[in-house]
Amino acid sequence: MENIRFTNTAFAAIALQAILVIALVAAVALIWKKKTKQPFELYLIGAVTFFVSAMVLENIPKVPVLSLPAIKNSPVLTTVVASVFAGLFEETGRFIAFRTAMKKNHDKKNAISYGIGHGGFEALFLILSTAITYIVMGIMINSGNTEKITADMDEATIALATEQLKGVSETTFSSILPSICERISAMTFHISCSVLVFAAAKNKKYIMLYPIAILLHFGFDMISALYLTKTVTAIQMEIIFALVAFVIAAAVYCFYKKLPQEVSDSERRMECNV
Image (tube, rainbow, N blue to C red; front, top):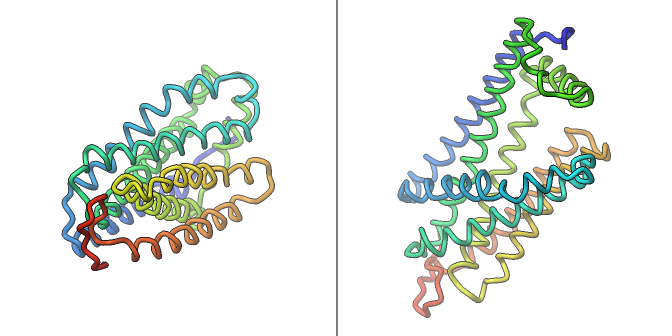
């Protein structure tokens, strides 16, 4: 890593990327809240559910499975396993949240509020943790303290980390656009899945939308395998993410418009739409 040096432009671009994602999430939440007068607690439930289901519970079985040599040494198998756990735990987390913490919330707008909280928190967590990590590592590398970074790494891991950090050290303002687009695609996808699982949790006639959401989540996350196998470039992968998210969102929007305002097993339903 001695030949790596983070430029001021790289530091600024990484920081700007985080700022833009924070602004994006805040703007979406505030605009939706102003339009619908949805309570803040629904966003919070979405954020907490993501943290508990994806960051805590999911890692309990996932970490030991991913550490198995046969899986650890295969990027594709790693992606498959990670995608399976993500789909199962996140969509189940959504389902449980809608049946418990939001059991009295039947307005279909509640699903979108939850989805903004769920997807928004994921975007904030990933972008902030990544930005902080890269900035700290960049400062350490520029200061010549690379031994603290590589202390617990074997040669193969050091080589991989060096290649990755070299790319990050050359970050420009234009190169952050794909990552921002990915966060937009992911957040859009989370809102779509939230609508599907909300309907499944509130009315048993839609129950099959729950496993469908799991399969969609698995498939969406598996797109990254195309990049890992060098089937597509990073830019092409982000385009695929965006296209898939848009197609799913368009289909879910049509479904959302046909849903009654109050989604439940009760025969009394309001037929007005947003």
